[in-house]
Image (tube, rainbow, N blue to C red; front, side):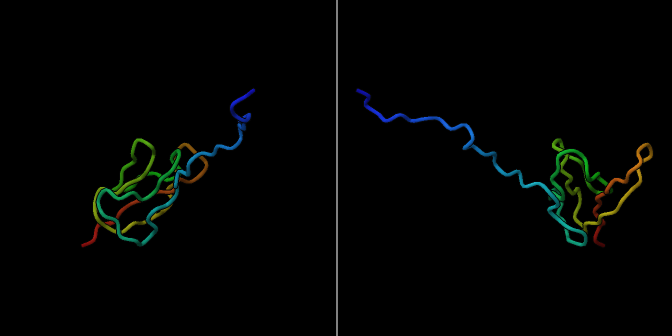
Length: 90
């Protein structure tokens, strides 16, 4: 006789963890140096002035200031690219 009940197996009961992507600081909000502005997969948003693109394509602030979003036309592409920049507070 078996000492345990049959356990069975279900392959579809696992789920991946949420990645929490998206815009973290919106237009007009103040950003501190090092704060993440956008988490993304790929470059939907490109880095402008006082911002930098990290290894996982997140955009973060290099200086303290106010976040501004705008669109910039790419030279060799038909669409527009969304640009993120941080304007210095004087």
